[in-house]
Picture: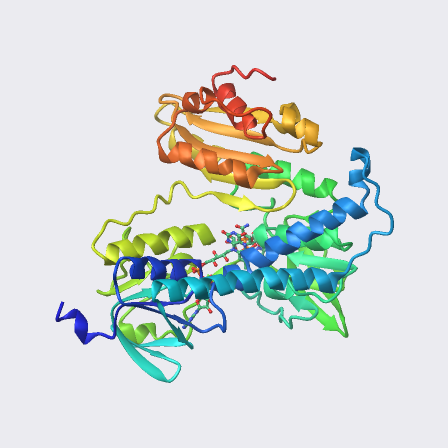
Length: 471
Ligand code: FAD
Ligand code: NAI
């Protein structure tokens, strides 16, 4: 104990995103003297300020707008006349949600007695950190500095005509033609927002399919649906340059394999080719820490780095760059620091793309599951189309399917993939089942409420044994 008192804090967390603020709150709950340093004016990190929350606010608002404007509701007997877009109001409501949520974290810090140190943090040594113009010491330091957009060489982001996700969340008017570079999660979510609000959207993707990391069949089905919605998907295509003249941009593209190029004229260009860990100016050298070849901080399963007393979580370490992964690591690292056993099962982290329909998955893709079990008996796959789900049919949202992948020998569920309007909510059940080591039979014999979209998961599980009822 006396040893601990030589430090200002038991735990100093650097970064107040979903990883950092959760780690700080849990550490304080466990009785540790905790501070959290944040360079932004508000708490909540990328996710609450310029990521998950504002993007979902615009996805929700633009979806309602499209339903009203596009006459989709007429078939339900709801006629709208004179529907108009008030983009300023849409942005204002988004800002309100962000303010309420970031303010909520401030409240939780006060409630849990976490000291908020305002300013950019830089290590002086393994136990001292300069934050703004003060230096503080801590027995344990958690690096939770998150990530920022990967730049595309030769393409300058001016946040007016050429924007990253932060700029794309704040465009003051609907571009006539938006070119998105990168057919990943950000490109498809924010592309959906602006398409629904009236933009023509072209997505330029280097690979031969969108959504890398997702199940192959899901990637194909998603591309089909996005094309049906009006997206121009240019896969196997690379951008060789972007030039801006006034408020217009020319985007030079050519086949990824080489060949004749073409120039796309755009009113806005969104660069969304991935994100990179935030480590610049953090003084990792002073702490004796090195980065791995991908610029990330490596940790063990307990989130300890190579330097005693320094821990790392969230987007700055390897793994999926997702808010809920960062949050769970935040809880686990605090518990480990407090001497408990904090664990995150990285094999069961759900991923959700919040487009319409939503696209979600947990566990292995069919390709990965087949490869992993190739020598032990392979896999069995059950699929059920949303078209055959009574609730989806009633709601007229029948796009998509559920797919359950199970080990052929043990029947243990290895992965679940869902394309459906409520996929993001439905995937939670699959996550729990997998966390408890469920077999497809366990899901198939679990009573699901009728009529719900979730019944499609039960039916897909029944289909693993070749016995779905409604197909
Ligand atoms: P961050 O949230 O990036 O927070 C790190 C914080 O550290 C930042 O506030 C930064 O200012 C601060 N910081 C950095 N360096 C220093 C320093 N030296 N000193 C002090 N402070 C510092 N994920 C989902 O799961 N669901 C979604 O719907 C989703 N939507 C997204 C939409 C967009 C547009 C983007 C860009 C991302 C989205 N993500 C989503 C990803 C999610 O935002 C990140 O995975 C998550 O925020 C990572 O949390 P983190 O705590 O590791 O880092
Ligand atoms: P991403 O990794 O999802 O997609 C980037 C895409 O750009 C890939 O398809 C890649 O092949 C392509 N690409 C790379 N270089 C290219 C080039 N030069 N030209 C054309 N295409 C190129 O990254 P994204 O969309 O930027 O998102 C970053 C992170 O943020 C992701 O890891 C994601 O997990 C997270 N995020 C999560 C969300 C969610 O959970 N709903 C929403 C938004 C972001």
